[in-house]
Length: 149
Image 1 (tube, rainbow, N blue to C red):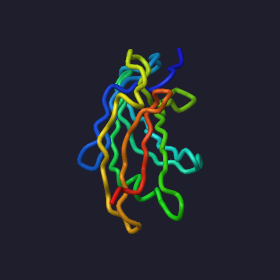
Image 2: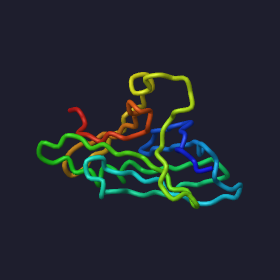
Image 3: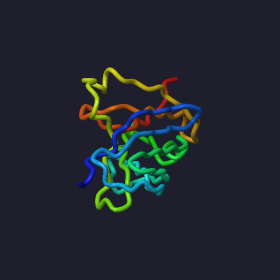
């Protein structure tokens, strides 16, 4: 059976890092430990992707990245005041990256109900904030924008 998505159980935005923990919905992995890739894709520029390693153990996954990865790649020049990054997970043996989201609970309207703290970094262009959030489809994304002054 081919897995449908990477189901989020925990998101930890803290100390300049974002850590995502969950499991592969639908199985399709082996009990051995292997490595996958958490892919962050710029929603407005899909050719722009950032990769970080993900540990896979059976159907479980865990990935962590420093927010500098995003702030250094998200120039907010001119009128562009934000960038959205969508998260996908590659799994060995699965032909397509899996969308990272939280679908298997009974929490409606996650975008408004489940919120995460914002983290800020100073960049040459000014302060930039990074915040995980759930989309209206309950997928996990990140918003990177100029920090409020």
